[in-house]
Length: 455
Image (cartoon, rainbow, N blue to C red):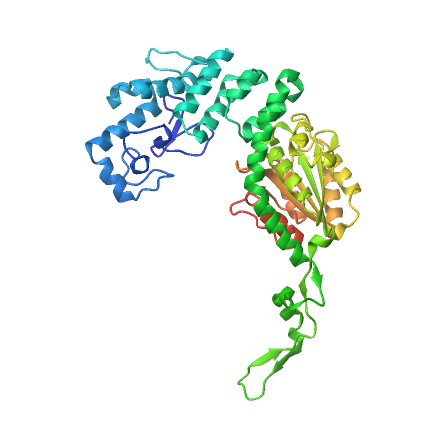
């Protein structure tokens, strides 16, 4: 159902529009432990709670627990629920309610169902000072994860993108991947006075992502590169025993008097190579920069910079809409890569793949990663022929519908099915899974496709 504060609920738990299902514990400080609060008519902990079910039920059965539950639902449901919950908000709670009302209950917000008779019609309007004050309020009253959701809703529901062109506004917002995507889409309209602040915001997010992703990516791919480089005279600690045994099974000998026991004579040893000594693999990241792929562009740029920093990999980064731009020369700074993109416009995947194909010199040692929702504005059959030709030549071809934490976007299912038939299944990939996907491609193993993927 839709609540008075513009949120939706499923099975009794409130949810912000278009976001994962939170519980009412997200609504700021409480008088009772957040982890011991249950949703109405529930005897189990709310999603994300760490409290045991029995503790939650015991707390909810106390007068204080019941009062706290009503307080939270009053904040979620809005002023129209004041009579049914019996709660009148004061102090900090009233300020939190005001911040929620400004976003989810004014006429411009497009809240489904309209507003009841609460008598209040606050809103953010189009005033930079009022929006700046509101941004300060939500950062005071809500945790960072909730702030990011509310900022995104404010931009989407109230059309506040233009205000981000003002430096003062950029300094007030909570920086995250979605904000970076919005800034990139506004890049061409951004005045020079704002660009410096915008770059600082983007750099902050990029540095956070690099800190999160770099170490594991390098470790995972270094291991994959070592395993993919076979040597036939390895030192003892470099022997790959699994491959060595499989390669020498023909040399199995039964031992007399040992009841069928035997041994494998390892005439040929197979070991791990030392990938860091030279370039072992070529990687081409081919990224769709249409507007729906904004988060994927951000993550792909960061991963491109990480891959480019590994001497054993030769990495190329290509972005495209109806034109193709090679940003490989800027990979030492992912912020430069991001500001070299131009979100929006049409899509010509075939043209982009033609460019990538022309840059392949060692097919058997090349991994091509296409990141796109597959809505093709170019020549469909030619696109599929190029993919088939690359795979036939030995290229490892990976198709990602998205590289983000948001799951699969809307995508062209016919193209996805056609690529799957060619042995290049299309699937959405999270940033945490991407190193494993790349490691499997480098080692020419089956890709770790998440469960319940459509293709």
